[in-house]
Image (cartoon, rainbow, N blue to C red; front, side, top):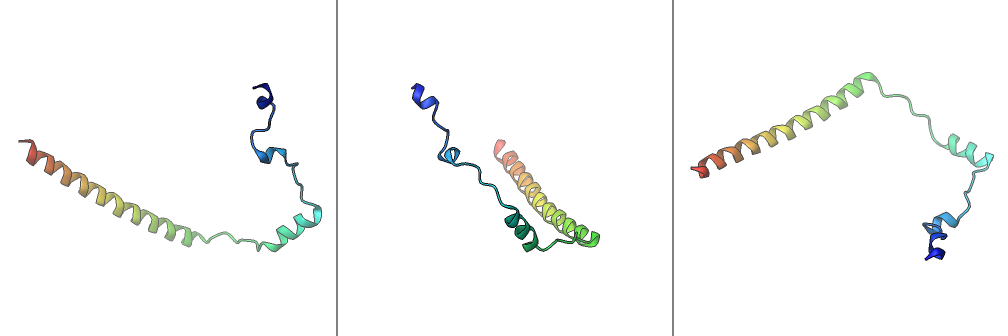
Length: 77
């Protein structure tokens, strides 16, 4: 049992940490195009769309709960 306590937790623990060289780091950052921030109107539009979808989902859930409530009242008596 003592021998198992000294083994690494996973096989990846045996591998030494690899470091990127200076050349690799510069090519990685230059390969990615810089993103310009989204305009405010676009963020608001996306948020409005998300809120509309959430509203529809919640309305459906409310309708289901009301239907279940009336069903329970009918069969309770």
